[in-house]
Length: 317
Image 1 (cartoon, rainbow, N blue to C red):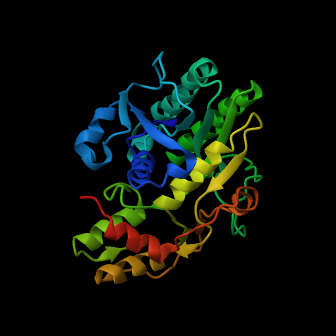
Image 2 (cartoon, rainbow, N blue to C red):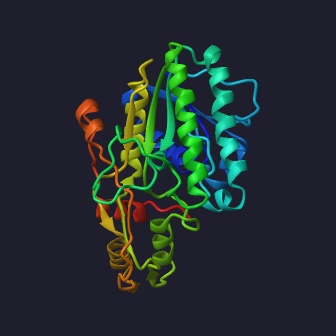
């Protein structure tokens, strides 16, 4: 019987992991107990009571200040605010929270999780702005700097870049660690009222509203379905080692944002309002996932259409 500790477990990643656990998709890893840790883990009882059942434990603690961590065989550190507005209104505070949470974890992990498999959830933001002409970003790409990122995203990217180094340092001290650089996702637990465009599209469809795209430039995104995300995270976690392997996590199937809107609108039979592309700037955020496919045998089980349909069929109100 293995115990999985999810730090920052009340967000989209944590809920998706718990949902998979509820449906038995984590059995192949031998996980029979999950500890959900966050500042207010008890909030899950109100937000998602169906995810609280035998084998799930809630542990309220602030990873930036706590002096105690639960023991666990596998750890997924996913603690960071997902609200873009916070990085705009108080960027340095959010940056420091991410850095402090990882720094404090690394201090505690040396004793509590010295024999655990540890996965740190990072972000594709560490690559900075995807260069023009680069169709997919691979793990070995090193950006010159992060200055081209818009305000808010830049502070988040700096924090994730710095905390990756802290995790790699844990590996140098002999702990088994790994890093997942995560891109964009879709699933039934994705917030539908924040900065996630596809989540907002789904909410508009649910309410029978037209789906509107505002960007007048070419915006390319790709979306990994939540069940694929959970499989990839657990696989990468179990391949943790002192060498600290790093993998991109996401879909490599690039889609124009206008086409994403059309697909969602078609599923809900609502109108889609898509402006003509008049600006030359191209915004791409697409990972190469060849390394994970080659080294770990991972693959995508859902394309965008099937991911949208599965999300809608399992939506949580």
